[in-house]
Amino acid sequence: EQATAVLHRLTVPVCPVTLGQRAAFGDSGALGQTALEFDPHGRSAEEIRQLYKYTCSILENTAYSISDKSTSLETDYGQESRSRRSAR
Image (tube, rainbow, N blue to C red; front, side, top):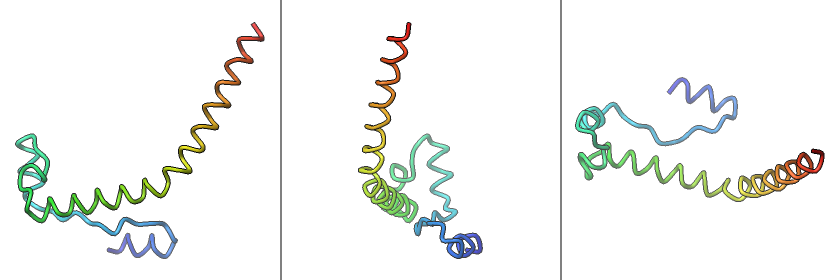
């Protein structure tokens, strides 16, 4: 909570979802499972679902800007590669 408060004061975005220290996380890992597989209706599974939803919403909001940048980078890189080949 203290770290979150400091980050908020610095205007650093902080994920609102927290993962508790739940036995299901350790128990599921020991069995080679995720918390969702181990106890799909438990609190740990719900925390993971909420984290997943939050992460997806962040990625959806940035997907367009990332794809625009990657397209221009690919174009720039392709032009650079062609110029290098022409110089040979």
